[in-house]
Length: 305
Image 1: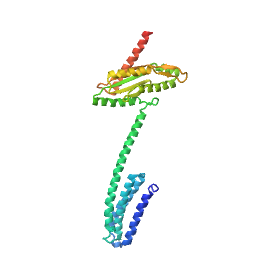
Image 2: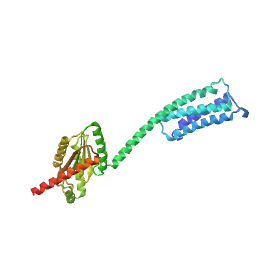
Image 3: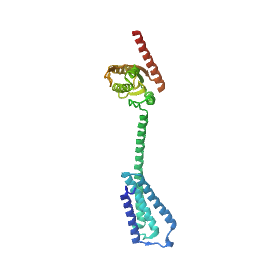
């Protein structure tokens, strides 16, 4: 503290010493019987408290405009109360400004400056609190993030879908949820290995994101299954967006890292729109429709075979 705020402390010490020297120069030290010890205790206590507050403020704060305001305000209060304490020890002519005018001037000025300093300190704390809240929010969202794709995970999906549902209900807007499942992803993992499957998931994540609107939210729901929250979107628009996503995935030629073999993918989808329900109910309906779509594809392959 002393190293960081040494010039402030030196200035206050210098002013205090000058006050002592001037008081001794223009007055006389009172005799033991003339001293009112009750006033000494009261005024000395106030002066000591001002010095302690100044020390606490300087010890807990860096240099800056707010610290300067606090130092100036508390410094003026300290010098004013210290001079009042000297009045109890040194007899000074009542006509001199040093006797009572100095305290009467320094105290209100010091209190005013201190008030400004405390106000700006309060604003600082509000700003720090907001920054801390944002950091904590980022941390919470990071914990709800899928490590492979960087997308939100299933918990994040439920959280954001609940918020989207409340907003849609309050604004009387439609809301759609789409679940996407990569067909035959297990066979890709078995044939090329899980590392290649992970790279494929990362590549498909980018493809899907490129074909979504800025307001849409993509999450990795589980394994090779993704979820897309479509705000302000009815069923017809949701089907159109889903069809675009399916075409984008089908036309994407993925090259494996080892053999350089080209892989083409397809996806099955389940779409549901918001009703008078919650996030979990929407996910269940979308899952049911997704499984139905996968079963339909499997039946078609059997018939074709």
